[in-house]
Length: 194
Image (cartoon, rainbow, N blue to C red; front, side, top):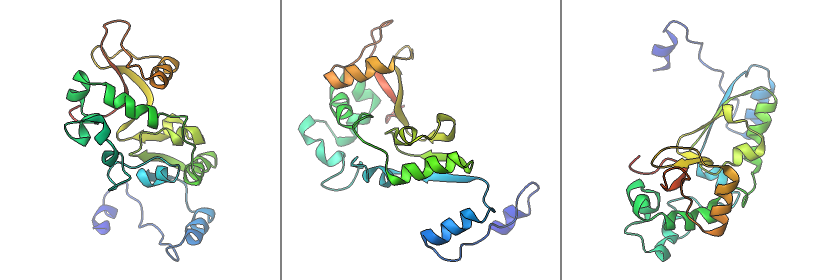
């Protein structure tokens, strides 16, 4: 298949192969000077090392530990239709996950180092935790497939909500409401049904 794409106008030659499937071989390749842009794909594993639970691991994942919230099903906590009627379970969970409780890992620091060295093209992540930003990766280099806690807005009129006010609401366990229309405010995390 690579042969097909490499024959298209504007494509590049087949990339160099690593000498071995080791971190040392990867480091050697990066240091060789042949690497100019690195795209990083990250998911839950990069943040579980920081102590953030993933969603689906039996017994330890977020969904396994939501029984105390009396949800109709575990995913309801991230369902926009359920949130419109019952935002409290999400904010109970948000208090446990909100940025500031966890610290970037060595992996996050490595991605930030790639940026500082001018090698990071983009960090494409499924994570909502903002740890890449905390490590020093600029917003312009992060694509968050599921959104994040970095910004928030009213679910009705879409007006942005202040970061410090949001943090205070989450810490106090109070569901934030829009000053303009009174609608519920939620982080710009993509919920089921959006």
